[in-house]
View: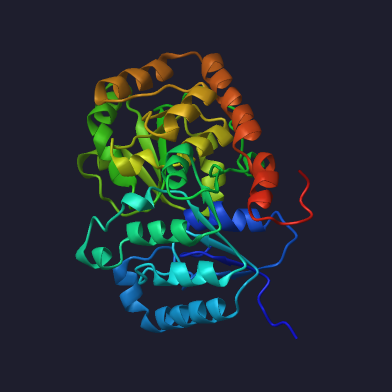
Length: 354
């Protein structure tokens, strides 16, 4: 009797984490194929402090990886990394144990050598990503920057963007500005420091118009002087899908770093899904997305100030045209429905219409 595992998906985080939800769980929800899913300890992140507080959960997660490799799955999807403790051994063992192993990544993990802490440097994501690309049968990259890097190391690379489901987002219907205007940002606590790069622009906009910043992420104050005009909300699936429609202008500033080059522009796509006019730094895939959506780009604080002011001065009808065009483009080019056949083909799944 054949006791081998059929289809298996491995992620470093649970469904509550954006990357795993967007790159794995949302796809699995859309196919009929049964997958055994392992989300390490199902944490929202793999911060060393969190792992240290849950040693039993970590030990059980490591043991589960052993059993999954021993089960020699027929199809294996590995997203980002198998274990925060691995230096590449789990990624290699799991991918080579499967008849067909696929590695998926959506950030510039290949350049992440553990910046931000000595503990992270003990098992950097860069080594794991490079090992996984080497031993996978196929690689799925979240954008062309990542895909081009992987293609230099693997003969079979498929580029599939991080998709959104526009039907899940409350569409923006009113484009008259709030009083005061509402700027908006959505993301994790690890990324909100990007807003400090445009702090001067935000302060100038606030002084001139009274505009406030709606931040959907955490309620922990960490942004210094601009906290005076920030309204914070904890992230939840409901807030993610409903609150963007009640914002006037979305923001996605990024630093000009190699890691930012590998970003998949997800915040920008979320704004587009809600029909929300937005401004972003045109780095990496952001430049392509901005061009497709017809949304403005800003590179430095002067440009951020000018572009936001221009959107605030624009007519309600002009902002509505921008938002509606963005929503239509996201549906055609960045939705799960548009990319499902390609994703299923990359996993070589049967029964999904092409």
